Structures are given as C-alpha cells and as structure tokens.
Image 1 (tube, rainbow, N blue to C red):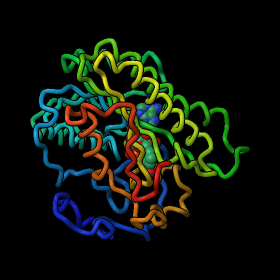
Image 2 (cartoon, helix red, strand yellow):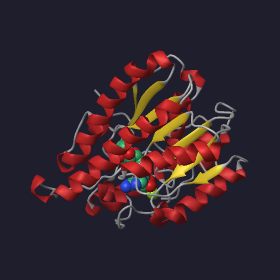
Image 3 (cartoon, protein in one colour):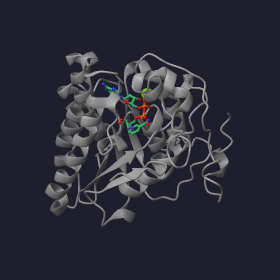
Image 4 (cartoon, rainbow, N blue to C red):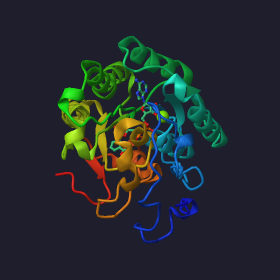
Length: 302
Ligand code: NAD
Ligand code: MG
C-alpha cells in the first residue's frame, strides 16, 4: 500500500486511513537496516513537515538521525530553525546523506558525525564535536536503539545483551553526562523509551529491560537537573514503521501484520512522532519535565 499521506499531515482526516496498514510484504534486512530498503517507504515528514520557528537558533545533537524516528526528528528540528549534529553508524551513510541534504535544504547546518555509541570515548567526542561544530549544545535527543527479537532467553547471547544495553542505556548515560555541563538553562534532553518499558513482550526480554531503565533514568535525571533549568523527558513509541523492525526487531514472519493489533489498526510512521519531540524540545513545554509521552496508536502506557 502506498503512502498517500504526506502532504496531509495538517488536514483533518481519519487517522486509521492516514497511513499504510497491514498486510505488508514480508521483509528482512541485516542490522542496522536502511530506510531506503523498506517497502513501503516510511514517511519521515520529508514532504509534509512545516516549521514555525519553535527551535530558532537551537543547537541539537540527535543520535540515530539517519532513519526512522531520528530522521523525522532531524527534519522537523531543522525546519523549526535548529542546527543539527547527526549521529549514525557508518554503514548507514546512504540514509544519512539524504537527511543531510534535507537539513541543508531547510538552510540549517548539518554536522554529520558517524560512529558507534557503544564506545564511551566516542560519546564524549560526539558532544565535543557538536559543541565545536555548532557553537554549543542545547538539545540532546537520544534516539539510537538496538532491538533483536529472540524466542527464548536461551538464544540471547551475552554479546547481544551487552550490545542492547550499551546502545540503549550506557550511550544515553554517557551522552547526558558529557552534554549536561555545557547546557544552558532552557536546554532539553529527550530520551526514547517504548511501550515496551511498560508492556514488555516475551521476545524482547533484553530490549524491554533497557526501555524500562530509560524511564527510570529520565525520571531521576529530570528531578536532579530541574533546578538548573534543564528539562528531561522521554517519548514512548508503540509500533513504528522503521528499519529497526525489519532488521531483526520483529520476526520476519510477523512483519506482514506489524502494528495491526493496536486500536488504530496500523503502525505509526516516524513523521507522527516528530511533533512530540519538537514540543518537548521547545520552550512551549516549559512546565513539562520527567514526563513520558506515549505515541502508541491507542495502547495505554500504564
Ligand atoms: P531506526 O533503525 O531507524 O533507528 C535506530 C538507529 O539507531 C539507527 O538508525 C542507528 O543509526 C542507531 N544505532 C543503532 N546502534 C547504534 C550504535 N551502536 N551506534 C550508533 N548508532 C546506533 O529505528 P527506529 O524505530 O526509528 O528507532 C529509534 C528509537 O525508537 C530506538 O531507540 C527504538 O528503540 C525506539 N522505538 C522504536 C519503536 C518501533 O516500533 N520502531 C518502538 C518503540 C521505540
Ligand atoms: Mg538507520
């Protein structure tokens, strides 16, 4: 089914029919996957997102900015007036090149900083390079994530467990730690949790645990830095049509039905997440901190 949506993001319409719904073609990709290779192509707001100056002059570091939710956030932030430092894995360059071009088309700075955030030293370097390249950092968006479904705990290797925790939890810790000393009052951090933080699936024992940790981390850190004028929130997506799912996050045979069980009957598109990240990054959410914002297609978080 084709995405007919794009230009309609601001028109009143039936959200059930707004975007593709099951069945989808069965598909799988090697980790981390490319948005370019997905069928149907995800909508990251390339043709639809309109900026209103809500992030004018801000300097944002976004991980996982090449594809999926991170790409939608990068496009939206740039159109809202922010300069962007983008992190992704070097194998994702084909996706990242498209995002850089879109940011530049919005007449904002795009600083491409590929590398593996499982490495502590690299995370600190990422913040340093962002500060040098953009002249500071006042928004940190942790979007990068690793998710591999396994039928049994017996199939989760220590290597997988490490990779999932390093990417989803340790990197967030390192990046927050590196960025906070340089963030001015009004700065914001947004982490990416999941419906899995609250309603863990049997095939995602390791991943769901990281997502629960992200919620506790966000809540505690928000309380800790509130008096410095820095806000910390999380977004908790439900099933979203991104390469993470096609690259092992969901079993290939489950892809045709992906997202079909939520009340809205379809997966979300990355473009449907971006406005929430914009809200949480901008001054419009000045009294919101330590919050977890669900974008789930109707399944309650708690
Ligand atoms: P995605 O594959 O487009 O994005 C994930 C990104 O993580 C990749 O593009 C990659 O750049 C980055 N990444 C992975 N390992 C990395 C590493 N070691 N170093 C640097 N970067 C690395 O998929 P997405 O669904 O947009 O995922 C974004 C976030 O949303 C993740 O945190 C994911 O857990 C979360 N999430 C996704 C869904 C969903 O259904 N797609 C649901 C809930 C939460
Ligand atoms: Mg990617």
